[in-house]
Length: 607
Image 1 (cartoon, one colour):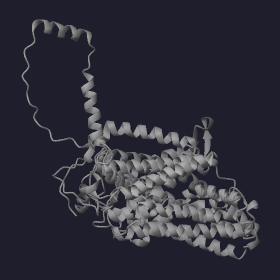
Image 2 (spheres, rainbow, N blue to C red):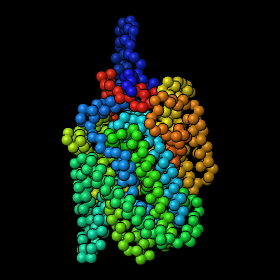
Image 3 (cartoon, helix red, strand yellow):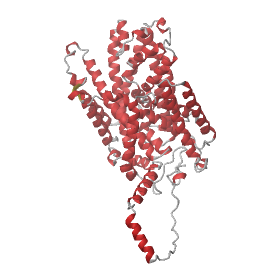
Image 4 (cartoon, rainbow, N blue to C red):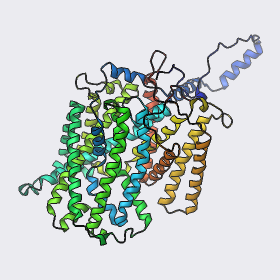
């Protein structure tokens, strides 16, 4: 659907049409008046920089509030400068599974069970249900938007504004960079452990090769194998999406088969009496476990970033997102039931609980399968992580928010070569020189930020465009009122999370919950939700499902380490500075010369 070009700014931020000011005739000043003016000029401080500052801030605000459909992207893809559509529905499902399930399925399941007991199964079900809410929001937007790269960044750009989209990108990208380096070091360590299963290699491999050896008081931690593994995976991704998808399909299938074999091997060793009591430490321990294992499902959103390489994106992307998440829920729950049924939860180990449980039953061959599965799981997680990063850089390079070198696509390989090499080099340097595991406590900020904003995007994009400019309270428009209600819901979720974390009085949590309910009712009954040109997949229960998703995501945000909050604030300030100095001046403008690619139900005009 093509819309006529209109203003990119919300109604409340548009600049009125410039008119020639009427000239006024002023009487000539007298000599006394001239003297007074000169005297004032000498005594009054100069304010010549004030108009310049005002112009800068005015231009920054105008640029930051831009929303635009990305018509230039589709034209690039159509002219052969875009990516190639090679991914079918099966590849997309395996892409999501490969991103979500790493070595954690063999570790996290047992470590959380030490506190939650067999109730860890309920923890994974609760966390999976919370992720399903986010997945429903991603699925609708994936089917609503044109098939171009960008994911959460693209959705935010269309639903809110340019600056918010850039902030979401920076938060996500720091998570991806640190996560890729950390996973690479873990993969190197697991790979060395796998090699040490060979008797003559055990204990003879230097630590600086795969496990890491610290120098200069721990400031530098040398790991040779991690950068080599990153270079190999980067080369595969640069070669082509068809080849990298084949590697991911093979490794993910191997991982799934190993998990299924482990589950069937453990079923015959289950003692039902180990499941009693099911929640030995109460339901609160189960809920706390859910906040921990929530991040074990992170990765399904990677499917949304493959829109430009999916064969039938509007149909296949929702299937890939939801299908991969549901498959992960089933695998995690099966492993939890087996591990808590084999061994009493009090006897589970901390470092390798699943392997120790099978070793205690005399099934040592399963420990070999676990090592192979861990290597396969970390490989696919790292591969998909590098893949997603390059596509996000490609999207921002096309928009001009990053240098144009990131927007280049190889003419024959049809991969974002420069973006992919940059991503691989950053991860290789970090993994080879630094112990990035120490930064793990500041991760997940970008993930929760992206999930929350995407859920909010579903609500704002459902609003009727003809009603959003209507005035609400004073000078506030209905659109502004809706955004304010979304912010209130998010803040209430964060406050409720703080109350839960620090054991504050339950009265504070109830008050935060009631305020969020009031804001939810305002979103439900004061906003007009349009139904014109619905997407192929629609999230059910809008606006309540996205509201619950935002509330729970922010409740989880409050459970993160305090340094993660500092990182969010500091990185946001840095991102605003980068945008003010570079992004606002280089963003690709959208004018009447560009033919807009209309989204399904997304207006080209900001409310």
